[in-house]
Image (cartoon, rainbow over all chains, first blue to last red; front, side, top):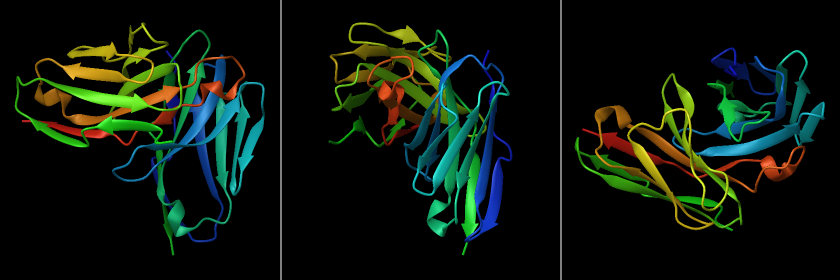
Length: 112
Length: 117
């Protein structure tokens, strides 16, 4: 069974610092990996989708990398802002499976 | 486009009552999903529908039923609610599944917060 882990569960950074969030998964046979943002009391917003053949994806201040062989993905958020405070979740879609396996998230607080 | 919409936003039930959670998407997506989110447990898949006319069990299907009413709508029914079903329920959809394609990107609704007393 695919296990997705996000460590640490919670972190705080001062405004302006770069954020680095890590996601690891146990089975490297994946189709893709998706990063989401969740604000308190809200649904999940898709941030980036990385296909298994890709090494990274970028959107504005966000950059996500994927190392399938080592079962790792990293989400970088440049020059963090208080508005980046949220929970970030990663999810992987396995081969032969129409489902996503989710990590439990990194809860981020950006301190002004 | 409204994306994925869910009704109701909040609901309080008594043990044994039944209710249906509604979900609709206007993105012409083929696949739809129901998840529950609980503190410390993360998101868990209840049921999904890969395409209109099909449904399959996910990780935690006990106590739930689903109906894929048409391509747009996917409902989740609790026949006899239990306190263990107190949770936040999310509906999601994807255009379909094509290896190596952005079709696989999953979009979520705003959630239904359900309390069973």
